[in-house]
Length: 252
Image 1 (tube, helix red, strand yellow):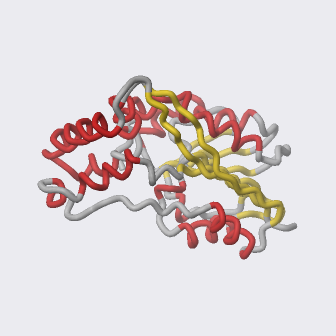
Image 2 (cartoon, one colour):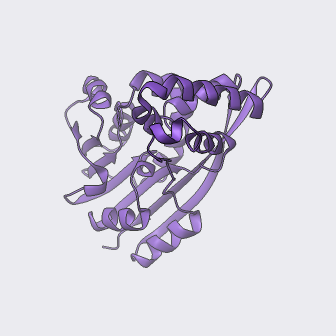
């Protein structure tokens, strides 16, 4: 997808807040081989690398636009590369992902594949948004099913592949993982008004729609803005963003 780094960074502080909770789950040891899936523009990957002394850290992303920005933060022991997280190869001591796995389908298969890429004693630590039941996402899907957008999108609607916390816990247990931690947390973001919510989702949830809508993009966005205003009146607005965080280790 054609990611826009500037749009994504409009809420950089809010988007990076779960990173701190995820980083706290990492077993910080020296000399690890680490991959950060969906590294984006790399600032948080740099923080991850700085917390892991003498480690070899790679950021992986499928967006050339994001990786062009990441070049500015690379250093010795920290590099970035283009690739698909769903087909990750190699053996890793830490597979880390902050808000990226939700863009890959079939999490039963995906988590199994990533777990298989862990070295003995390795750890997977990931965070995914679980906000797909929020009114903003429901209205996006509703609008996508309306004409002329349904035709412009050729019937496409984005269905979140994110599982429940129980399902992630059971999946990791079935894989033989140890030291399981799985929880959901609400990050209470205070946004100015419904227009700010539109700005928020324009950097994430709306991206796959924008790339498919062609000449209907502006009309689609106009309808979304009107629906959001009706559904979320007033100012400021509490935007309760739910995230699932999980961590597990492969036995030695």
